[in-house]
Image (cartoon, rainbow, N blue to C red; front, side, top):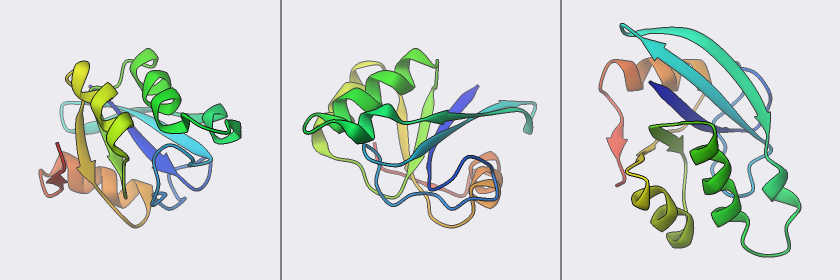
Length: 112
C-alpha cells in the first residue's frame, strides 16, 4: 500500500506539512506487512499554481498510486478528488517517520 504524506522537506525526518495542496513535498511511503519498504520524495509542483493547487496536488497523489493521504489540513476540492478515487485521508502532525508508524499501528484519525 502506498501512502502520500504532505511534508515540509524531502525525507522522513521532516515534519508533516499542515497544508496539503501547497506543501513543498510529498513523501510516498510503500508499506507491506506493517513495515515501510520504500520511500520516495516527490516535489509538489502544484505549489507554484495561482489557483487549483489542491486539485492538482490530489491528481499527482492519484498518479503516484497512493491509497491514503496523511496531512494536517485538506481543502474541500482536493478532498473531493481523493474521494472520487477512494483514497482515504488521515490527520497527522509531527515527524513523518513517527506519523507513518502511527498510521501502521492504526492510531491516526481518518478525516474522510
